[in-house]
Amino acid sequence: MHAPSVLVVGAGFGGIAAAIELRAHGIRDVTIVDAADGIGGTWLHNTYPGAACDVPSHLYSYSFAQRTDWSRLCSPQPEILAYLRGVAAEFGVDELVQTGVRIVDARRDEADGPWTVTADDGRTWTPDVLIVATGQLNRPVSPDLPGVDSFAGTMFHSARWDHDHDLRGRRVAVIGTGASAVQFVPAIAPEVGHMTVFQRSGNWFLPRRNRRFPAWWRAAIARVPGLQAARRRFITEYCEALTLMIRHPATWGRLGRLYATLFMRAQLRDPEVRRKVWPDYTFGCKRILFSSHWLPALQRPNVAVETSRIAAVEPTGVRTEDGTLHEVDTIIWGTGFAATDFMFPMEISGPGGRSLRTEWSDGAHAYLGMTVPGFPSLFVLYGPNTNTSGGSIIRYLEHQVRYVREALQEAARRGASGVEVRPEVEQAYDEEVQARFPGTAWTRCDSWYRDDTGRIVTNWPGYMREYDERTRRVEPSDYVFH
Image (cartoon, rainbow, N blue to C red):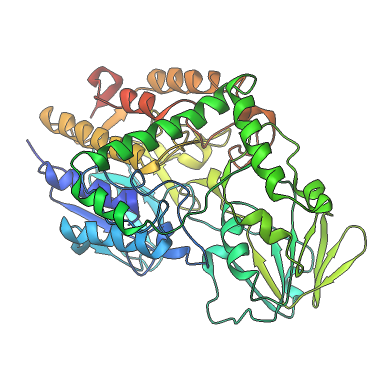
């Protein structure tokens, strides 16, 4: 039984999990490449003030590498990065990572042949299997506004924070009010001279103070048998309850909206700010955010919320459609990521010159979010329709890498060089997934979950436990082995 060679693109949680899983089961020829200068993925790039995970750390961690010494409910970026790098070192996969490698092209000419993977500097790899673990939140985007190149001040995206730029006393424009802005605005608001937050739509919030765990709690987690596991189970069920609210907006969703309303009204003492930031869409349609500090920050005397649309950027500031010029010397983009582009602009081609970009022109799709007909031995981690609305993507990634490993072992048992999902299997699965969205909160507004066609391509439509079950075992009849 021949073990295949594997190239993993991406050294974040998905890529590290894949390498650990494969090597633990005898697939030793694994190489990880990443465009960055080290292990970490999104947690290497997102170093903005206040950066932390929305998901509690006892769940946002590998099941096989649990820690009992998390400092907070939701750990800050440095702690998460240190955890991931520590796990990689513990399992010996940190030595497999080649950094500074930006993959631009991957092609497989024959169904039973290798992939030829090319980096932007001309280096090539020829693995039997290609695993793309670049995720959904890896490429920052900012709007192409008129005059943006004319701005005379400092400008950067939150995912590429300029730590050399001193914000003390600055006039700052924050464009965007998504999950990243919700964390960094409260962190920098006390030090800036003045901040204008440009908002397209408000968010639904639930509380999260994220204080340090007291010493007695950390001691209990470390020493009381079963407490860590019980904590993880509790958080799992809490997260599944969020999905329940999103899936049933007319019933359970009303309870979530009531809870959020009571919390937000208690925090929004300024009636004008309340009017501006109150969301006008169904609870759960967009990402539900957790913060006990965002709404108070917007009511600081040195912070203003602007809801007029931006018309242009000028050398001295941002002009809105009402004609007002908001003079600033710093612009911070909190405008998120190209989530629906997945691994693009990387070009991926299968036998016969089949292009994945063309295949996905009407919306990204993949069987179980991992594999696409016409692209043998290509697997995508955190791919189409695998984002979690309430829960930990690491749990999904663990199930995905186990599934990939079993598919490769099945191919090896059959003496096959390639494994490819059957078109009718993938099509039926995709139709089933899309049929589960109507009636849910996700369909009741526009969001980054949708692509340009309006199709929801990022989110899994159900519960974590359902995805666990769907990926529990590989059904060989679903695949063609070359």
